[in-house]
Length: 338
Image (tube, rainbow, N blue to C red; front, side, top):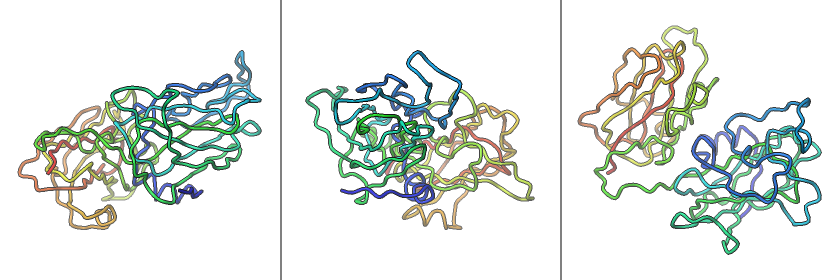
């Protein structure tokens, strides 16, 4: 196993648009223990918003940082933080380590380890860890992207450990992979297969200026419109924004829910939903053979639009339209597997 260091554009195309951040706080990821967090708490690593800096702000410990920072002169090889994955378990492909505003006090090197602990237990001193991102150099105040050259891990994990050698600061940590959900045994059970916890992934869109498409697939309805999908205002007649979602598995669709929660003056004028059975993501993205399952119709502000789907064939992807533009909080695709 070795790691490729890639740029933002490559990481976005090869990782972000194909996989999910399985440790994000919005998904339920949580820092459960760490070696040290004297200057700044390890939980900041998983915060959904971009890090900020206030040079005028000081705490009892010293300068305030929006990230995880440990004290100097660590006698051990590395400081570490253990994080509970936000899904049942996941296979891992790569990560982002952001040292924003840590300059001179950044982590010089990092590595990532993972483990699976069964029956609701937590890692302890006897836990065996597997290296999934080998020790790699970090620079000051920058976003850095690491991808496993041998692809997704063969094993799936529910805990990860981020190590920084020997100490220092990291602002944000994102870990991408494929959720391995625990699904009902009965195929006839209807579940939301667009939800990221069930393997749904938003793979392409026309625009995500104010809010990312990954937000559409999060659990719950959030607390404000910051964690929805919102596009720029269009000025072209006949324009429509869109997003394509790969379902967690191929399925027969029973109901679609389009939620505009918190979007009250910037919701779409109209919405439409299409679906397709495609061999892979690129085929779906390039296809002109989509089937309309929710015809174009007026949308409402701050409202859960529910649409029953009858006589559905098997689909793998859905395409949601925001016409001509606007914000949508969540997309739910309730279906039963085949």
